Length: 231
Image (cartoon, rainbow, N blue to C red; front, side, top):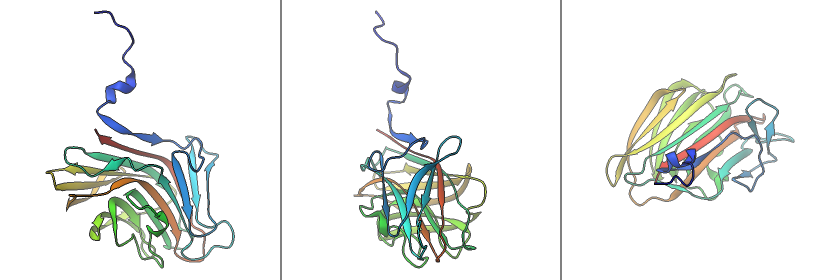
């Protein structure tokens, strides 16, 4: 049989869909959009590999100022026989001891500015998705799965933040048509597993955010974000 074209490398991975962004450039409204509750900014910094710098406040910082990065288009969903993996490399330094609020994960939130509660309240009390979060007043990562207001939360002992980037990896592994196991890894180490029911869920997308827990400007640096699901 005559070989008409070379098999493209991309077709080797035809069983999965998704994307990875190294943030060599960023324009809000393309793949990603920004949303804010203060006077924040989001721009690619001058760094090897591309770093997206997310800042909740550029003027006078105030508590509860927040800035979010959400993917345009809801391309993912918790489904039987269709695992999901998402991963992000992020770094932040506390501007005020332990007052940074951070989230990294997947969410259905149509209005991402409500994804972190005010006053160091942690993730929203109702959404569909799974995420890593760092709550103001603590210095460790938490992990959460949420189907509406039914939530499972694990607070780990893994320190959050510091001078070095941390790789956060989440896996959705369906066990049946209604139940799945969520696995959370930090720098390759398993830190949490959660068994949850997911029947009749919403479409979800990658979402990251940072919020000031006090009147000091926090900052989240994002090296890359990736999300893939089996077709």
